[in-house]
Length: 111
Length: 278
Image 1 (spheres, rainbow over the protein chains, first blue to last red):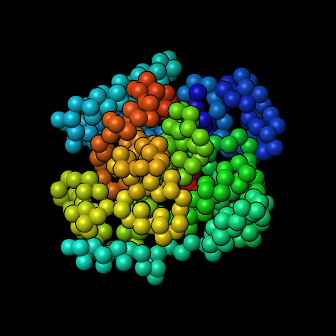
Image 2: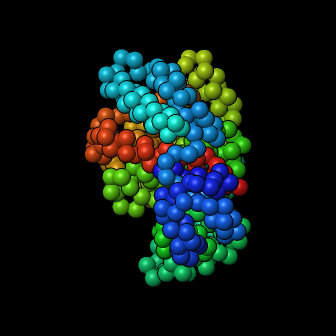
Image 3: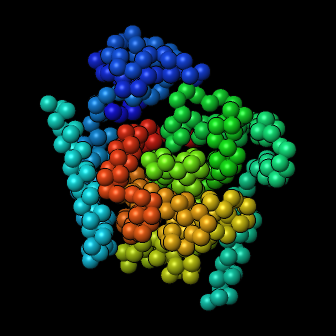
């Protein structure tokens, strides 16, 4: 599941959450596979973001200045003050495992 | 040393350069003290200032709060978020220009910390997660105020931080004798902010000192640490602060829960990164 700007929406993406109008009315329901018509309607209604299934925007390499690969590479450096702290090493390990898991998930999706 | 510190406190709170809060805020603060005031009356007062109202609505509709649909009136915003959150938003809009011009990247760091604070509060079922979002949004305000009121010292802080490779907070303490957390506490008193916000702002580096609302200090502390791992924006150094184990555990957090929180953060991060209120 990923929240993406409407201008990145493409035909074939599937809505993970319904798109609502300002008054709370459902514009397009969840699980809908997007067609060009849908995207045009959403644009007309001034919708800026939609939540779609999977993670179509590849954040592994970088998206809006944020990348998972870069996060993994930076861990040693940003945790450099806590080399002798067992707890902080555990925290660092958590993020290492977490980001690698995310990376793998994104790579598998690309196949 | 003590005299110098008192003198600097005076300088920091001297009103000349302190960002001015909209006069509406004073009026609203007085109105809240009267129990008979209705949200509608407060909304009417805020709505009189159209520029401010537009800014507040933009923030209310930001990814931080993540309401489906659009909130189009101040009254609706007040009913949904409560007066404490709206007050916090008014303050953030008042200092936004100063934040972006005095410390590049701090706004993005604040916005990210705000979003994470709200996600943590939601995941551990705390009441009114939006109030945590406000505390997260304002948590580094003291840094901005130091930058405006003591520009020379701010340069020294940055130099010492780089040269000695210490945290920004340590550098502040070296140069000023106190950190932005202390300035936060002064500001909260000065602007009469509610106690939960004050404890979060004053103790986000040392949450065990929070006596009345430890959840607030703990949540913003953990959110700040995660925000520093993500390195969205820039908050003065490239060092993850010591995540206090006690703080982490007292919120009932585990690494499993942290993974869930991170899932939520990553799901929303693109929207946060593309949101810059003007």
